[in-house]
Amino acid sequence: METTTKTLTTHGNCTLVQFEIRPESKFSFKPGGPEITTGGLIISESGGNGVVGKLVALNNTGSFLLLTDADVLSGAKQNRVLNKSILLPPCSKTIIDVSCVERGRWQYTTRNFCSPSAAADPNLRKIKAQSLSDNIIQPGEIFRTQQTVWSHISDSMNMEGFTSATESYSDLVVRKEEKQKRHFPVFEPENGCNGLAVLIDRKIACIDVFGTEEVYKHYFPKLRDSAFLQAIAGKEEQAMDVHEAFFKVLDLFDRFEIAEKMPDVNYSGAGSLSIREENEFVGVGLECEGQMIHYGLFGK
Image 1 (cartoon, rainbow, N blue to C red):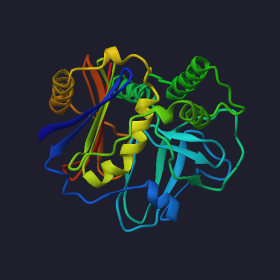
Image 2: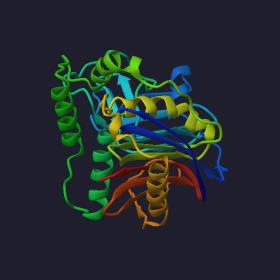
Image 3: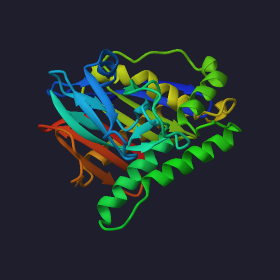
Image 4: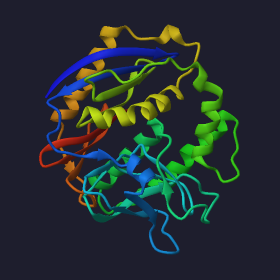
C-alpha cells in the first residue's frame, strides 16, 4: 500500500493527522449507521430477555454494512459499544459481540437500537482491543472485557466530576461536548483521505483506516470529536512539529502492516478479523476477499 500524509490539526495537546492509503478497497460496502436510521439495519436485544454481551443485527439491505468498535448503540435495555468491528452480509442475521456502557439500566426505552451518535474514546477502544488480543494469545484464560469497560467509564466520570443516574457513557459524552465542543477547531475530512491518526502528548493514541473514502467521511466527524474530547486545552506547547507527526504515523502503520496476523476464530461477520500486537501497539484488521475494510490500531 502507498501511504501519504495530508493535513495536521492541533487542539491543546491533541494532534490529528489525515492521510490517504492507496489503492482503495475494490470490495463494495457501506457504513451501517445510516441504515439503522432508515430501517435497513435493525439491531435488537438477543431474545426477549436480552443478553448483555450479545445483540442481533438484521441487515435487510442488499449491501455489506460496516459497524466499528467505535460505535456506541443507544436504546433497548441498555446502551452498548461494539467490542470489535464487523462486516454484515446482505440480507443476513448476525450475532454481534458488545459490552454494556450503561450498567445502571436494564429495561426497554426503545424496542431497537438507534444509530450511533458518538464514538468511543481512544482509551476505551484500546482496552477492548487489548482484551481481544489477550484472549487469542492465551486461550482458556478469562479476560473480563466488560469489567474493564465499566472501570474505564467509572474512572472517566470521576475525573470529570460527573454522575449519571444509569452510569451512561453516552451521558458523559454529552456532558463533555456541552463544555468543550464549542472550542474545537472547525475542519472537515480532506478530499482523498481515508485514514485518521490521533496523537496525544506527541504519542499515537489511535489510527483508523477505512477501505474507502466514502466510509471514512461518514466516521470522520465522530472520530474527530471523540479525539478532541480527550484534549487538554491550554497545552499548545505540546503541539507537534508536522514532520515529527507524519513520521510517527507512517512508521507505526508500516509496522502494523507487516506484523503477524492472529485470526479471531470467534468473529461472526463477513470476511475475517485478525489481531496484530507488538510492544508499541495493539491493532485489529478487518478484511474481506483480500481487501481492507477497517483497521484500528492503538499505541501502548
